[in-house]
Image (cartoon, rainbow, N blue to C red; front, side):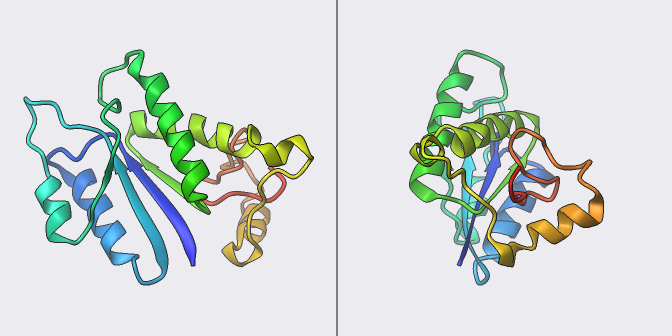
Length: 158
């Protein structure tokens, strides 16, 4: 089964929080889907109850918040460690903060692991259709550092 890690900065009231919960719950049959979130500040309303009602138990990284701070380094480290333990096939990020942290952790996950030291970086599985998508788009939407396309899939050899 394909493993998908979805990252959002926080589950505060709004459309993005509902979207990630619905997507995580709805894709359970075809994907092993994990939701990673940060904490909601006290002045904002928390939609953790919404996730619970849909049977989604998010993994919370307390250091991930809306504000830019040194805690972001801990967030990236924790995401990297999560990627090492969960070994996701797809990393899907939502919001600017989670996108930045997720991409940096993705670079670390892809390039700074023991397999790269012996010349075997992680490659895309052929059944994900990554090679076909890259050729159809010509590649401009592929992040040249992480190998992820804008749809969240990894490109082979990237």
